[in-house]
Image (cartoon, rainbow, N blue to C red; front, side):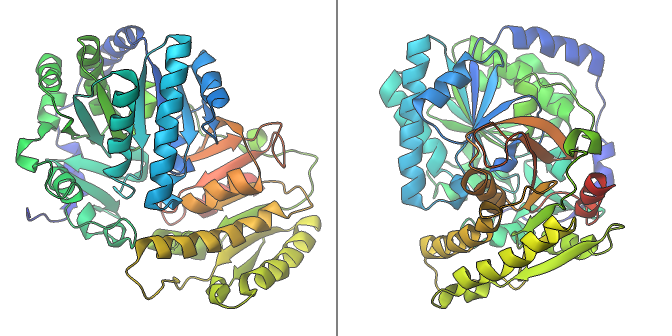
Length: 478
């Protein structure tokens, strides 16, 4: 395995700059030549971190997919939440989604591109999900996929790929992904920071890093669009294409080459973080959302912040939230009661009673799971996942059982925010309003939901600085 080390963030300033005006014009022209519907399968609801005025469907019925195809927008999202699924569940879901996409594509006579959007720290059911999509779509449509594009770059979250190594920003340092807490994930852990080696590791050697196609920052910054296009055209047998990126300009250059390769007859699936969706979907920049856009003036109730994620950054952000300039009531939820009979059920009852009283009296509450992780003494990943889901269901039900409409809802953590959106708020279709802070998206809930037309803030567990949760709450309470 390649030896990699942390590097200073200053390295990001050492790469050649490009003429962005010229690049943007090229991109706009190229996007006009892409007559495809872009379908983003989101393995948790944080994938809309870079977009606005885009629809998110929380089911994958044919009717929902047809609605997505019928929209004027070139892109729509389907929230699978598959990072909270077992292997068997995600297998079943991806087969069903593939069939429904192909059926609707043929019905409305429009071709498509699939982006399997996953975690920017490379956790998730990989290569299972993209293999399933490839095999099912090929079987049902006759389409043949030449390559898989792997692009975990996500600037807003501090995720950068340099010299094929994926880095996570921690303070002033860029730490190789394989050396972070994310790589130790009980369900989706890994060792390699070099993305080619990571693919080889995850595919158990089926794809060799030495055979993969690499797109370097030097090529991207030199605007070698023709040579990048030729590289993409060389892809065959679902070979992996590793894309380096440290800024949106890199994504834009790559997107131009990608569209040219697609229009020459090549077919690809993406496994990526959220950056490519913004660029390929032609989504404009938008200012961060304000309190006026997010909070109803005549609602005197308090808000609720629900914190489930256990990554270190979330715990640090929760501690910093205690320094909020507005008063917040903190309520601990003891998920360790999961092994006791009716333990979680009674805990939910206790917490709900306090939450309803506080919110009705105009007080904002932060409900957080006990910070010591609850891990089963087992190597059975599915069993561990099932206990996590049971805990998440209990935490989520706090919002689901609310009889009072809060002034705002923030859910912290991928599985938590997905379950709040789909199970507690019963959202079928949401519109992405934008972001309250970089990388922190806001849904506007649909008419069918528990609280219609309510901004719902989806706060990833591993995004932002230590102060970002507090700052977002201060925007809402300011």
